[in-house]
Image (cartoon, rainbow, N blue to C red; front, top):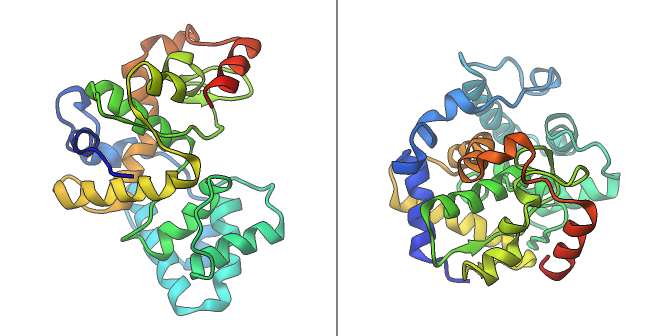
Length: 264
């Protein structure tokens, strides 16, 4: 899939904190990134350096990458730490974690949409020049950025089930991803965007980030752009739809299910 220049420009504008993205972007990520680091991290890689959570997270990523490359015997433990301890996804079977590890080791070059939130965490550490994390918040951020930028030739990324009431809570049927007017079907049929098919979503995403890095000095690395997308997804969703805070964009179970059945 060709990535429209309009989409690249929208994401670069976000990264730079321009216009509608004031106070956001990569320059703001040190303040906005709040994802906690589990205590088990230092037991795995040693003491972490940095005065902010963002800086300590970068140090953890670098040390995990170094450990992955230097000690293959630690890869099973690293995989479990990234997915379960740090990512909070504890329901994976051992066989699933093994597939994620083999994908990162290069034995499996497929990129299925199922499990992308988990295996992309590992890929982003194994080769941070080519890969970045794709999860529920990042997808919302990408679609919201294009809406805010007024993109006409856009890319509608498929949503990933999440639990955040602002970006999208599948169980409660509320949030940006659950609003019919921002569903993939509406973005495609009403706004005229291209649908990003699920089997291609991760490749399109990483290609987009790489192109942004090549075109903008505001994108020093893929993982810094991804961390900005992740940590600022709620702010982006609220700039598109301020009513999300008051649950006004909540859809009923029946209506949402019917809509998603037609436009998944």
